[in-house]
Length: 72
Image (cartoon, rainbow, N blue to C red; front, side, top):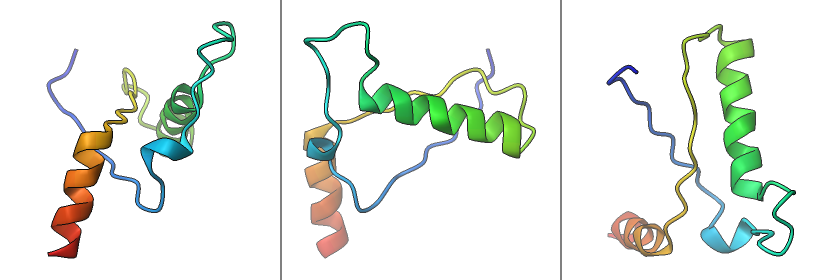
């Protein structure tokens, strides 16, 4: 596994915009679907075939902190 990492911050969406289907474990939640779409985009559209995975991180506390910093 590579130590290289890329972080992408998405503006215009908040944690409450990504529903989780906890009552339907066979259905991937929206955060997982977004991660899979980004993974496919990097591999297929940009030819980055050594991309090992994409993980979405939805943290309401950090989201609020970033919003506060952008207002400063």
